[in-house]
Structure formats: C-alpha cells, structure tokens
Length: 104
Image 1 (cartoon, rainbow, N blue to C red):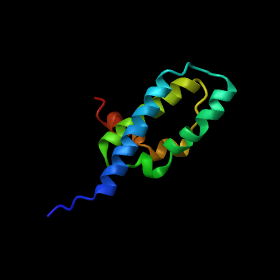
Image 2 (cartoon, helix red, strand yellow):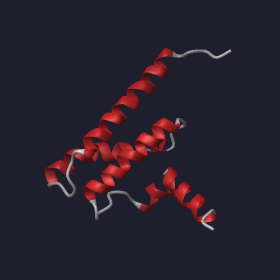
Image 3 (spheres, one colour):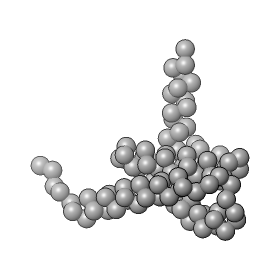
Image 4 (cartoon, rainbow, N blue to C red):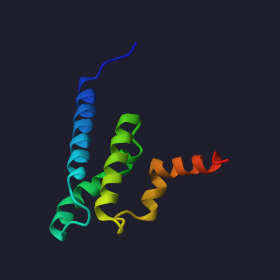
C-alpha cells in the first residue's frame, strides 16, 4: 500500500516550480553580465551545486538542475564557477563516462 504524503508532494512541487523559474530567469540574463548581477546570482549558483540537489532521486528534478547549470555556464563563459569536485558529483560525469564507452 502506497501512503500519500502531502508535505513531501508539496515540497517536490515547490522545488520543481522554483527550478523552472530559475531556469527561465537564467535564460534572459546576457552572457558575461556585470559583477552586481553575478553577485546576485551567487546564492542560486551555490544552491544548484548542493549534493542533495545534484543527486536528487527524481529525473525531472535532475533535468531542471542540468538546465539551470547549463544556463549558468553560458552566462559566465568562459569562466566556469564550479570546481572539478562538483563535476565529479554531477550526473554529467556519469553521462560522459557512459558516452565515452559507447562511442564506437
């Protein structure tokens, strides 16, 4: 028997909406904005690389996080705001390892 937990469901919906809105907002920010914009983005960037968000169980959340991270990379290019350690934690690392193995 599956028990419906309304609090967990609402938390999931709120997280999903927040990530959708963040992704939409990141999309309208031009590449290489001023330092004030980058400073304002920093809390969002920090939140995106939290382990519990990067390794979320839900695939939809993972896609939204990936979308946000790709937009952040576009905004700050060519200067990546993430450390090598973050890349090892993300799903991107697993994707690249899988695609390298299946390349030929």
